[in-house]
Length: 275
Image (cartoon, rainbow, N blue to C red; front, side):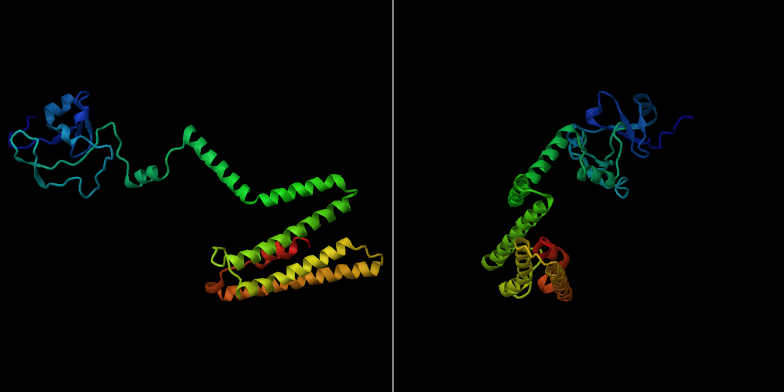
């Protein structure tokens, strides 16, 4: 059946970069057409080279695909108003959704090159962390070296705990030094009372460490005295634990002013290591 002359033909568009391959797209349906189908049944509009798709191609949304606003095309032969054509890719290019394009931009594909680069960045980050904590590495080397100079297993444990106690004392002193000389230094939490509050909080673990070092270096012969020292140490440790728990509850009640502190972590780092 022959189409009447008054009925306009459906419009197809061909991109300038696809002129040699003659790839056409139906404007209404988005269906790819061959040259023979387009020339017989459709009105073919060839876009000028100035309207070639840019590198950052913007796919149309459902609202503006069939925009019928008229515009004057400067590159045309007669300069007459023409119907604005929707921007439709060729049939070889799939039309991804907005979410797919965002995911492709946000999560780039990992190949062998950038995988090695990311791995190298991770290794450098770990090296920076270890460099900031080199004191712990040196202390571990010191503990490992003392194993060759002790007689039995009990001596190894005792020397290890003595070194850990000295390490804890250094941590407390450095903590007090930072609070005194750099009060505005960013930290996860702040103990109330300024430097005085820090000294009060540091007294309990310092006394606990001093008691432990005294009991470790002295050798009481009486079994009752040794058992009494053990009970005293356990009681003192529980007392320190209770103090940190009270501080934890106080800070929870005034979270906006002093931040957050975990008493169990502080008990381990300040008083629980030698215990």
